[in-house]
Amino acid sequence: MKVPLQKTLRRVLFALAALVVVGLLAWSELRTDGLGDGFASGNGRIEATEIDVATKLGGRIREISVDEGDFVQPGQIIARMDTEVLEAQLNQARAQVRQAENAILTAQALVAQRESEKATAEAVVHQRRAELTAAQKRYQRTEALVARNALPRQQLDDDLAAMQSAQAALAASRSQVLSAEAGIAAAKSQVIEAQSALEAAQANVARLQADISDSELKTDRVARVQYRVAQPGEVLPAGGKLLNLVDLADVYMTFFLPERLAGRVAMGSEARLVIDAVPQYVIPARITYVASVAQFTPKTVETESEREKLMFRVKARIAPELLNKRLEQVKTGLPGMAYVKLDADAEWPAHLQVNVTP
Image 1 (spheres, helix red, strand yellow):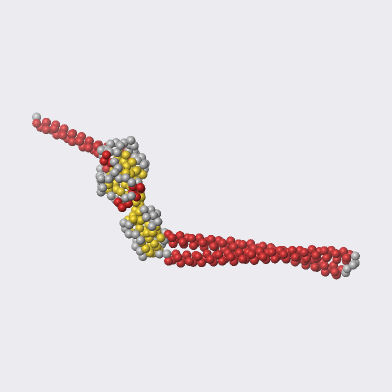
Image 2 (image 1 turned 120 degrees about the horizontal axis):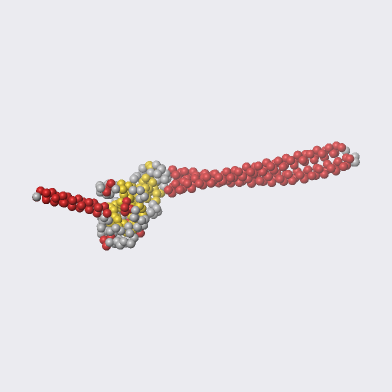
């Protein structure tokens, strides 16, 4: 009788153990770290937006005025490129501007000269027209007198020749006016060409000045130098990297949530961050990103069993006004936990009440 009883006990114990395992698995699947159904959590690391400081043009690095770990402010010059070649090109471009300005003055003077020639030609036309009128009247009078035999026929022929000569002179003077007008048009085209050359030279000067200004590399935000990629004296191509900065106004934690929870996370939802290095502080944050495509969770984030699930990447961003007062304490790469409120009406538990304020 003892053997069947022992077998029965073993079966009961095995069944109980199986129930316990199944219960633990179900609890680990459905639990929300003891926060209730209105919250979710995941582990991640503090990250920040990285900025590569690169050259616009190729050249030699003259100076790098910051070192790794230094804080930089907006507008601060952090590096300078050698501008000797650009300055020589700028001097040449300025000389071309002066040359174009002189060309405009010369072309304008030529226009004035051609206009003067036209005015002279028009005056000659008036003179020749008056001479023609006088010759025509003289011819008419002579013709009437010759008809009455008051003058010899030779006089009529001479007056006719004079009238025809006056007509030819008038035609010649009119052609001179047309020639002067053509000269004016050509001179004005030279003015336009010289003005275009001046604008091109001025644009070249502006471009070179911009290139020289861009040779002073400045920051546009509060940041910290993370790496010095190059050193003074090195020659870099266009787009070559000098420094790597961390934007201290854009700090966030990236973590992963399973499908059943990620769908309940709304943009702008409240979040709380607890860093392993300073677990006594609860940092407020907001959800600014939820991936639209699921992925297998990286090995460094979740356990082996959870890596088989599809997870969604989520970002919880720390408020910039909170960061601005603690720039010296901002560190990237620190691990921690992120807690997200899924239900807007849920109340944060006591241990996740914010104790860090701007």
